[in-house]
Image (tube, rainbow, N blue to C red; front, top):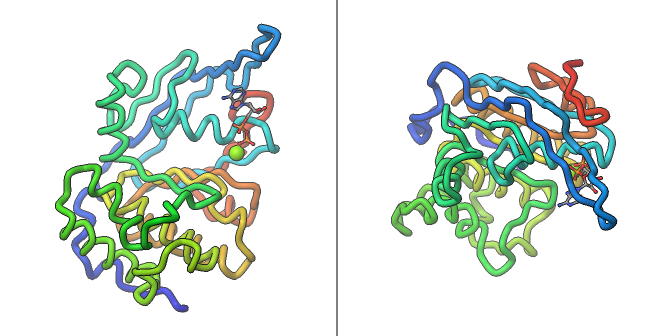
Length: 244
Ligand SMILES: Nc1ncnc2c1ncn2[C@@H]1O[C@H](COP(=O)(O)OP(=O)(O)O)[C@@H](O)[C@H]1O
Ligand SMILES: [Mg+2]
């Protein structure tokens, strides 16, 4: 199904065009304790700045710490030490409640395995972050419908995830990630489970959001072709981040 080409016709993303820095990580370290009390240093003193509208790729071998880093950058987890600022707010020191609110307001997440809720329709899944934020159900569902329209899923709004193809699920997941008009989308191997053509459609949706609304992208991927579509490519190796 062709994607519609009219994101810019809507006024749904008033937040996305501010200048400046969206996200900053300072000296991030993450250590996990192994069974015998051994410490596993996964991330060592990572520093990263993501500007408004910047597209960042993070590549690295399986197990190198890409997902761990993305979760820290998105405020889903707290580091062992170091700081993460989202929209200039210190994500490490704030309360859990406030962290959820900042995340819900400024960040969008897309995962390799879509994580749509099986018992809800595409439209309801997309509406979820808006409902969490306190948007009325009618407004949230209306916006969800518009966003599904934008990702070429007009006729799939009432489908449950099991009734969607892999690419449709991932496009619904992107619609869900952007419903609160995030300043940055964190995507963890968003095309990892898709065939080449479907992956390309999903990538085009992300790139269009970036272009039209200056939504920053942080994309973890194995796919160098996708990585090369970003402005900056970093690799993680031995716990350290290097610009390629
Ligand atoms: N909660 C955890 N407890 C212990 N070890 C973990 C935990 N999460 C991740 N790890 C370990 O950290 C390493 C990096 O994991 P991950 O960030 O998922 O890698 P990647 O996404 O690059 O494949 C792996 O060796 C993994 O086993
Ligand atoms: Mg991973």
